[in-house]
Length: 392
Image (cartoon, rainbow, N blue to C red; front, side, top):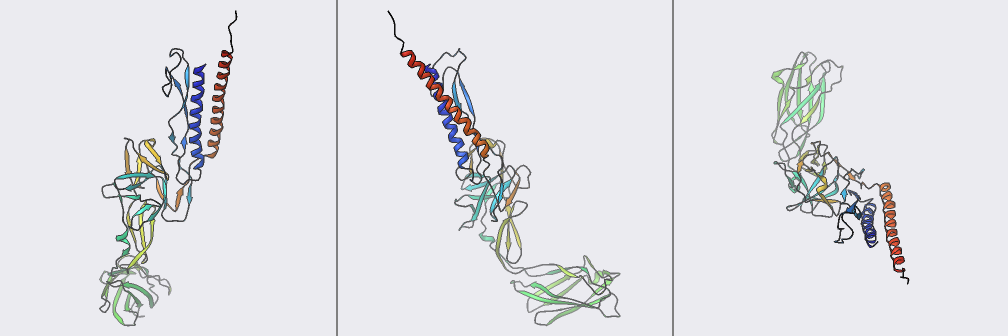
């Protein structure tokens, strides 16, 4: 009977621990990136029970109560909710972000990131730096300070495309923007004029914003295709320090299309000075800067960790995980299907299933109630035993 009391006590203790675990799950229902713990119980069997209490006969075949099983983390993916912030990141897949603090590595499924005063991308409210893959495939912290300004580049070539109508006599591109070595913008007007008697020959004249003519050259066609002798025309503006090649070699034609021409500058080399406008993560999982001059720069691939045994991860505060096991871990990019896709402007919600948790609460409550009844009945039986008096 005393053994039954200890068994009942094991139930009270185990179900109390189970209640604590379920309560933690429920209270983190709205915690970003939280992963629920699965609560299980296991029987105690043998000649001794946990806590060093020994009673009963080991050969009797009786159990000695219950204990809470080792908590396992449910790594099922939570809902990915849109936030509108470029550096709110989540993973659609199985990977983990790598966060660095010196030599220490932490891991997270999602997080709101910011650029701190030192230029590093960190998890908001912490000093943990977002890891990107270096040339050797190892996670390293990235400082964006050196990329805040995009230096100017002079225009050296303008590539043209599409059709210059063979039945028209003139066509003008009024606002061709080219850039000097110091990033200054120059607006050129490019005029194409054909003499009525010259079927396949056009005069190309370029003037600057001040109306000064920079030169005139001949653009010739052969059966509607640009002649190789005139496929590249060079125009120079000495005052602006510009020497620009007009490239008509690829995709420029001259066929009949009434008086409408679709000729355009499809690619203009060079740009002015740009400053950082946005820092985003593109579809390939790369950090990408967009500058005010409309140029972009890819800084590196975000490092994603893949664990052979995710249960070796231990939960920490702020929905972070620490790896203290000896299992295999690999650092991969988002282009690897094993880790999933990095999504910007989204945060992963908690994966707590409230219905399951309430169901567990009821079962735990009933288990606790039944264990307390064991103690109560055992106590009544002992009281009854104490009430027996000898006769004679």
